[in-house]
Length: 337
Image (cartoon, rainbow, N blue to C red):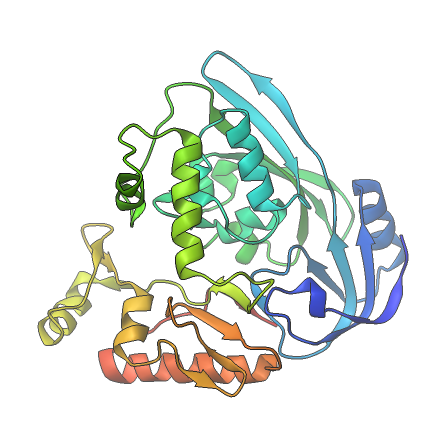
């Protein structure tokens, strides 16, 4: 462990934004994490995982603690299921590929999502009809205040669409150190009904796909639509798909009958934010070094020298235009710092 001052965070956020941490330290074990918390009780703290779901708009005037805990293991299994524990600092996509190599099912639709395992429950990440809550069992966390360890089980996490207890009731109170998933060993529930997965498999003449083939299809689709953060700074989907009550949606849909939507309950629909942004004319637009990706309107990008404030200004312009045009509020999925 080495405490560093005036530390550049450019390589620690997928937007590639140049910002500095007042102080920075990487921890590799729970014991190291507890030590840092004990030794810096009054210092303001900022917890950093994979840096994939944030937009830095300023320097971080705090002690940045980078969670770099590694390791994964099987903790329990029976004939049908396996319980796998991953440390928080494991790269999510690499962890997903590891589960597929073991023929463990449940995470394949979430291949290639950027970030680390420890932050996945916070956001209840999801893609192509799957969410973390579908396979999540529990996570261990350390309390920032008193360094006590606590296990959060699924029913305590209040999972919702890109929501959890970690973004609300216990926000900034705990640091997740590991996560346990319950995955299938046989009779895998292959889900190819969402998005373009079935079409991608059909292109390769695959009719009864394996976990690996579903994962490969998802990877191919994501690569065709989403830029690699190593090549073009971005944080994946910048906005949530808005959820609108059917009562409010009826007059909007009457005015824009071509608007896409999905029923999510008897009283609510989900509208694709990417469709709204594209219809408003933003897809592929560039404002200096900040812009909207040419293949996916949900993705804001840094062409090299954009500041966080410039990307934030573009996002606010999009939000205001969408509301003015369609009467629908869209919210950022990315955490603006």
